Image (cartoon, rainbow, N blue to C red; front, side, top):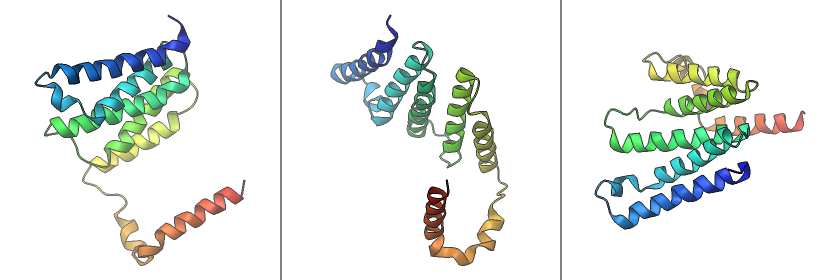
Length: 157
């Protein structure tokens, strides 16, 4: 199998299976044929290119898209699935861990930081509550502060 054809091959197979299930009208397929399934198909194609095609740069987007697709399906089908903002840093953390596992160089520190944020967010302890009280006066101007900080970062290289 040629390495350059892994991503388009898996992508075409996945989308073909998606539309075949749609045409065959299986009873359980109606719930599965939604946009999270497309995220999973594209994510698996990226992961296949990353692992079998030895393109480590494809592992991060593949695991991110697959994780998001699984999360959105979990929200739809599993009553106990956590519908919490902490799932997003957790999924991104897993993507960084898988990328680090493949490359052995970049991504470990962001993975650990995001995992800690995700774990803290799932606990009842809110370490950021003091921020709400301390900076309550900022109210509606915090987006302007973020924009200003972004401009400063762009100007100062």
